[in-house]
Image (cartoon, rainbow, N blue to C red):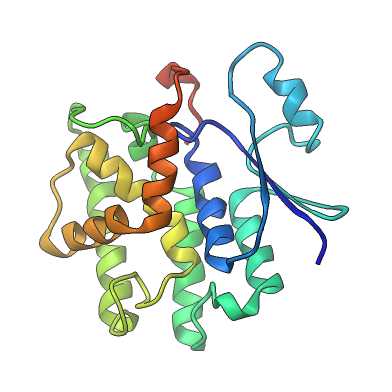
Length: 219
């Protein structure tokens, strides 16, 4: 198989890098990892050397270059079908793709008020109607997925899928900012925190020393 190389941003801050990294880990494929510290002198040139989009994450597979978190997850699902990164049942797969796309394009109030920083805890932000509405929406999505298709395990669709990759950074945000969650959402957050790959990512983030202003973080 052609060599896989994953280009990531700072693990403390780059939620969009975390998402496909988790999918890549779930394939059990060997890959090289290149970390590009964001918002330091010359970082944009470093990124442009890997992708014309000039952003992280990027997956290189031989001569192929795939960028954008969800596109990388889709590519990995195609290349590694045994990983079963999407649910097999049609209805479950359709719901998983829908909730993943909603995460990809939505929840702007949460992203703005709760910038991703997985090495931080104990932070608080002012509440607003829009923020609370989005937090409730996330919880309702988690509940719907688990009630309809999550009987086989603790993840959104029972077993680990791309949908979990997309929402794990949200769960970690809720930990950082102490969001008030219902019982079911709290259980899902615990599942996330106990996952070996998530723990590995956070451990690496805690070794980083760069500090990025929250106004610069793209979440």
